[in-house]
Image 1 (cartoon, rainbow over the protein chains, first blue to last red):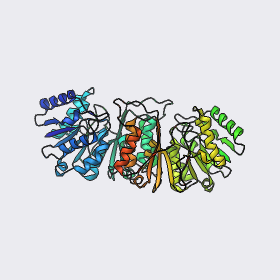
Image 2 (cartoon, each protein chain N blue to C red):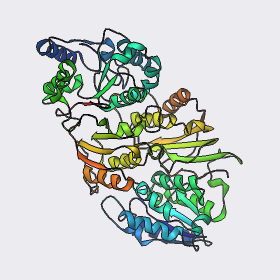
Image 3 (cartoon, rainbow over the protein chains, first blue to last red):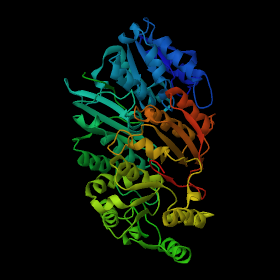
Length: 272
Length: 272
């Protein structure tokens, strides 16, 4: 299992790379990991200019020696390179796992829409900085290296089609060429650091989309670090999702075990 | 000219209503204005529950005695009642002007998409609280009452098709039944209080939409109260818009005179 790390949004530090590399060396003897030097570049908000981030992604995705492309972290920026990346993929890109979440969702969605490789929502190297983060990173590696099913979101069932996204990210890719066909899919959603009225607005947008209305249902992960609103929004995240599911006729299927935290579980897109 | 004010998002105070009513009485003898009692209701984030806000809108829209429905203010909430409102409109709703901006954009878009009435981006009663706000409110009234063309966005040309929206609002209605056909339209956009990376993300979303790509071009209004980002985003709002216009092939047509401020000009949707 050869793992290549790239950073389509913001950079990581050498310290994060060293910690994750040490963890792999200590606990995953079957794996090799390499952080693309682009991960440490800085260009304003981003880990290098768009063309540098896109090229780093293609370096790893198109290299047949890599089995897994790991998004270094979230932030903002992968939507800016998604079109360039998807247009530059070659055949080795199809035999690869793409692992990440949050901002990575733009590219994961576009890959899934085109049937290129295997897209997986799950922890990223930067998560090692969270409390309990070593376990989060190890959880992702246990699935990647040894297909440990305990790493998976526990409600996944054989035959179910599933995708998982950050609410804002998913909202912002609707109607773009990155939007995947969600016919009969369970859509798992999570959010972080958004006012509840914004989550409500995103759910309006998501559940009003005709493609999303063909989904089998929505499951809600965790919505964390919600800023306080004045006045209080008056509904919890689950009440918001139930409201919009009822309005749109999309079944609400309950909670699921994903989120911007160390407990975040893996969700391979499609069927497991 | 009979004007009915409703509040599809957040409430206004009696003081705002009194000031605007006094201004109409003093300077616009040809006009009568009535604030629907719903404008002063409070329900968490909103000026009353969804059904109350929707009914107030329909009370005014379906009443043949009103010539103009004026959105009291922005905030958040009109997307929650848009479907209910659009489904409840009767024939008097077609002979009416709908005036507002910001959050009002959801309903204005849906009305324009269905060809119901005359939709106008422009100042709202709540703007009277801004510095220079009496002039903003008077500008809207001069156009409504006496068709004063000096109230209009100065770049509007006879025959041009135009719409105007807040960037976030427009992004969040894409792919929903509220999205209007923008074939050959100039799309005027403005923003307030959003981090530049969010404006960039919205522009990705907007310019990736196939319907928007059929627009004649984009004009950029003012983006105000942009919170400081760390690190700095590295691009101004105009650079962001030019970037995405170049990427998407949508012509960038320059700036325009709209925004969340007292100088905000009127933009009737469609042709003037």
